[in-house]
Length: 340
Image (cartoon, rainbow, N blue to C red; front, top):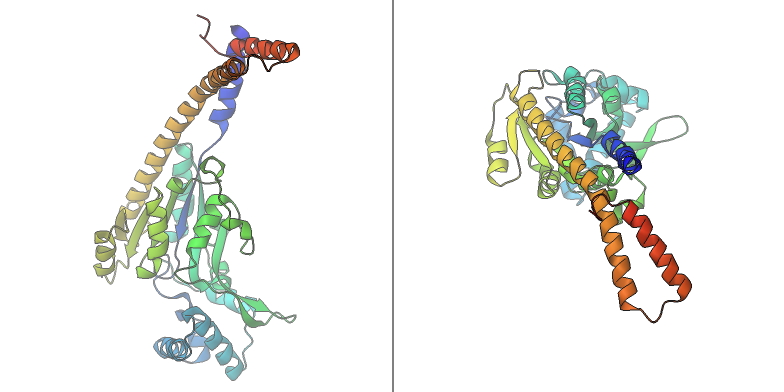
């Protein structure tokens, strides 16, 4: 019995050592930052009012049945050529450094990581944005993010933006939730369309949180919430316009809504900590169930083995019967309490 106890003790140690992973996915514009990221310095650098720029790109999209993201990406290239200013990665990253973030965002990630770790959970952060990846990469929080999924440019040999490489809109955002869950992280990896059994997911869907601010986040909110995860709507604390989150909440898109205040004592912090607590509790239950499953599965194997032998008594050779008997004996030694 001592050897059997040691056998399961080793298995149980491995099961308990495996930390559950959860992910928080964020929109960027008006979720982590107070305005569209292009509006802070990038659009003004072309000596154009941001409202005029968005009107022009919107009209371009409407007149040409064009994706809105492709339209504004085209407009940026057009203005860069008109103004004689090369759109290089460094130019975008410099603009990203000046993006204004909501209160507490700069310390939010480490605080949440530490809290999750105290509950035995590994926390990862992802951004899924229709904005420009290169600008987000220049922001002060880029180093806290495991992966940034956003629109981006193709650059020529001189490092100048020439063509959209990736255009992320509100509908195709959902593919990145699947990528995060399945572990197929690269944008070109078509395995994201493959069916993956729940037990093989890198991150369970019910361990995913999505934080967004508007109707463009609905597909991601709906996907995450429908699979047992959590969605949170945020609104600008200064403008205090809550009509959007009220509607999303009434439509069943949200678990929570709160001001976009990421400081230590905010409602948002309180809600996310509650979610972490619930995920930690669920994962502890799953761990104990997995431990109980080990000897139960051994018993199941023995039952199936005996049923097979009984079903085909005249079709087994003497050698096969001996092997089955030996397997039965081996399983008996691995099933605590079976012979008691």
